[in-house]
Length: 410
Image (cartoon, rainbow, N blue to C red; front, side):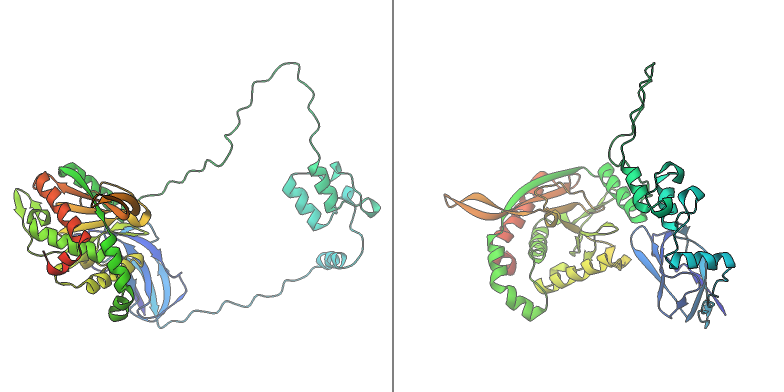
């Protein structure tokens, strides 16, 4: 019985998809629930599993093609098994083949080069080098041509050309080194990222304010409780949970930073869904930590780790990516010292983390070496004033430099 492989119902706001990869070839066996093909949408990668056991009979639509929900992209023959390839029959040997085989398996001398009967190895080398046997002196027994003769002839420098009476025009030479080019279409998600970022630049009045934070207190706290935290909660105590907690406390004090614009309205969000930018093979994605204000440090770390793993495996769903009231991006993991992040619309602000570098700073009138990080807050100046943006960023700085504030929520 033939079963049609159809494009499943696509997520809301997604009109079409692109065939990314078929994981099987036509004629190969299929198991129920086995992933047959990946479909790339503007936001997520969708898997299309088999509903039956059988054989992938036909692939109707190849990778790169655009498809819509309900399109038939292949056929499975239910219950069928893969046919064994027919056994190869031994080749029929002619008298000439037998004579040639005998010649190559004994010590009988090969024909001379002049008869064009050199060995297969010599003929192959001559062909590769673009040479003719008659032009090469032979040193083998009976005037036979050897591989060494061919190589020695090829390694000799070419004879100097006789100077021409009339000077020729110079010959144009190709530039040294590889100058290859490759043109590939944007993936759907890369095109969508480009569209959204350009939309953000065209519509928002983006401005960025900077500050720096001394992370010694956070480092000391992580070093002190690193082992016991992981033993108790089964996850590592990273930096991101501190930044999420500090951001939430700042958002509570400055609710405009947690708002968004809808037409001529400002929408104040009474919840804290924090987007955490994650770099994947398909591009930058921003999965959401839902209700982050209700989560503990351990729960935040586990959630972010889980979303990061799903991003790398292309398993993020629309639910993982939809919404968000504020975002955090960490270029520091790649060594960035400072940058100006772009808003993730319709959000009004995004926090940029950067690399942690030991730098000399003045503390209580003394120069000391501290682990310092530059922070950047890009915000939509249409609804957030510079004063609120600067104070918001300073609140994050204070929470990180004295983590007890985060525990006491002050």
